[in-house]
Image (cartoon, rainbow, N blue to C red; front, side):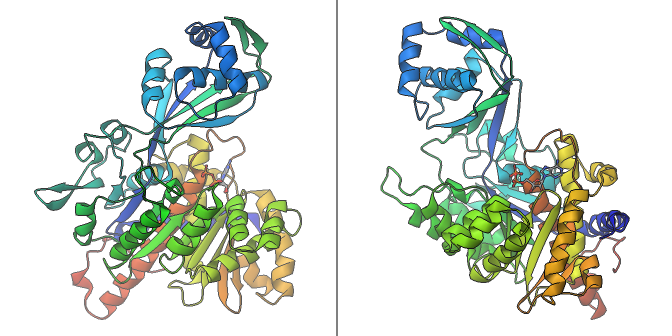
Length: 510
Ligand code: ADP
């Protein structure tokens, strides 16, 4: 594969998608958002915390090794344990008390939007879409502040029994607390010498206190659900956060209730218009029952598109009964990319999807069911657009607008990615999935699917790595919808109905 050719294709795809985004009426994004509060600990921060407690009490608590944070002493015990070893840890807390305590006794350096839906909402709003409708069931006043302050970003609210759309800062629930994850970073060499503790931190790492309040429910308020059909016009939805569903709740409800309601929401969204498409963004789901249920009962047969990384492909294959393939994906190695491709095809068929987009460091693979609505060139443009978007997110830690993305066209396409794909060519050409020339374009034609494969841009020293996967999936899916809409409008225009559809004046054909 030719590197310069792919650079040129990235450039063309960026302008192509940019030009066509205005065709979209809007996107719906749900469910998960939270606040990430980040604090880089200094020696005096640690001493200050240690001095708040009796030495003995702390020693006793570290011996207990708390598995959840019930009170501040649990937090401190886990912090000391993590720092002594320099070992990353993530510990849940089920109340908002520790958030209040940390705010008062430690404070944070900065806070940012967290959670896939929160990150994707802000990203799409900053791409300048006509409308991005976010829905977060636990939208608190504090959480609302982390949404981009832009007019195209809205959240549904019931006013006088009617569904209205307002900025999250005017649509939050006054009765609800915030879901705040604390990320406590520390550096190698940090000396701790106070209150009976004496050690030096052996390596850079972090302790995450992840907030899982008992009231957290992946659900939609009944009144809102009933009026969901008036939320449009919208072209598609990106849904994430299903990993928050628990097997059982204290009130006797179970995951089955939440799965059933989630599917009903999907059905209502799909009824908004016949071309409405839904993408689900997966993440790591520890609980195997929940993982399988999400795939088989929420995704399969209900949504069109799935986005995931290599580990998530392996995990999904594993619960769907493909242990060997799952193992081959995780092993990576020489045949890793072949296993990944075969795994993506399994997911496409077993879950009755139209599209499965797998992102790796250096390349993306998107497998498509026959009958998908675009040419492979158009799908490729959507993927290339998302590669430049990912580069922006890695380079700057955030994406403030389309100009930022244009600037990161200068980030080079990954040579390692190209190399990995060159190795994959032998398999594809050998199996007659494509000719060598077709492979150069990134096009693969299976008997029961098509696929697009692209090398992606990789930032050698990323400023941040949070949310890059979300940006890739959301960017490619939204880009694809924009091209579908452009083509629809074009057809309507050709049959003399163009004036019925609002089109951007600059829009043009391929
Ligand atoms: P997250 O959910 O935190 O975004 P994922 O594992 O879902 O994490 O996605 C990470 C993806 O980000 C990788 O698959 C890769 O494609 C992309 N990525 C990671 N680091 C870089 C980088 N330095 N430059 C460009 N893309 C990157």
